[in-house]
View 1 (cartoon, one colour):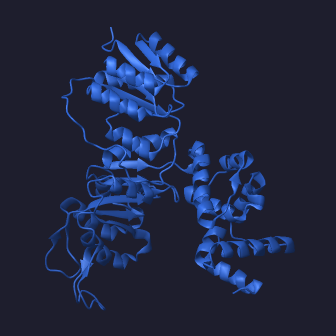
View 2 (cartoon, helix red, strand yellow; view 1 turned 120 degrees about the vertical axis):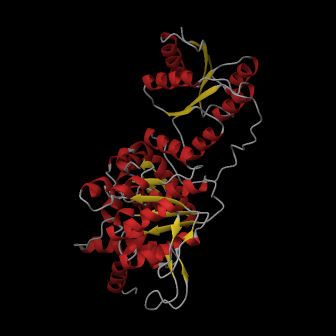
View 3 (cartoon, rainbow, N blue to C red; view 1 turned 180 degrees about the vertical axis):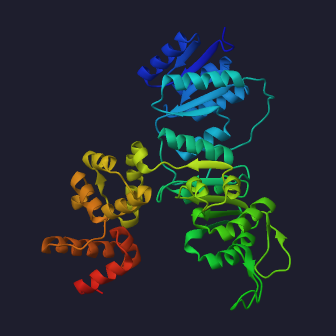
Length: 443
């Protein structure tokens, strides 16, 4: 006989509710089911359920209210939340509110059963007490996506953020690795301290040591004063080492020693100093392959890889593309005082595209379309044209050259003449834009 005799299911969709109830009853559970938060809160106040399964978005109240009431009336209650519209904020709220797990819809019923069984195995008496955590007092974020892969990443962030563990974030260029790092810092105990990002690939190898560890006066030619490094400047905060795979072997041992001992020795200094800083790292390279090839120290790899977050490319989370597209469209429509609308055909075209530049490419394209969309409608034709024009190239025909000229004029007008911003929106380098403006007589 199962240790849990009764479950409460809260789901406003009749077909989903019936499916879950039928499935769990066939597995031997006694299931009570309701379709609104009002009914759920009434049941929870009059009865004690060891496990509750609730949708997040229900009616005027949410599954987070169900979670709070369930835990207030029975601190030992384990609440499983499910949603088809998950976000970083709701996962963080659910985690801080004490949710047992969070499942993204649509889900396999066996996954639901596995979660229920894990909840059963976790049941144990819990001391009652007041929890003054304000689950609504959370920072806003641009983390967007409700695909199962993203929900799992949100769960990892919610668990690792309050710790001081080193985190390695892996993913292709444009997948949002720095955004993940900032979210970890923002939800950590160091949130009020400094967050310092360092692009390791953009710093000359000969300068990386002094950049991170600092240098004393006279340590090298031109060092006319003591200079603090990034680690010291970020003391008690977080340092984000982006493109960690670009660090040369010669410096990797020094970085490993710092991670182990938390002691820096500025270049030319006779002694070191202890620094309290959390390190997050990211790479778009296959570091495991680099280790096998002898290009990256295995011991440093192990030290960085305490907790690993693998960001999926956008092509593997196509269900999130419409969410991201609408988010960026609103953002840039507000910025440029435009009113472009994304049509269903435009949305389909975006979902079908492979997005080699990932979220960053989508963001730049939506900024472009918010300004340039013909008739303020972002349809299939507009999306496909924008995708083609994202690649820098010379225009072969006069008509295409005229189109390009008009687009450049409109983007420059929208950005107030900011050529750097205009080049980014147009998907070309700034020097290319200057060359085109000279050709057009607008330089």
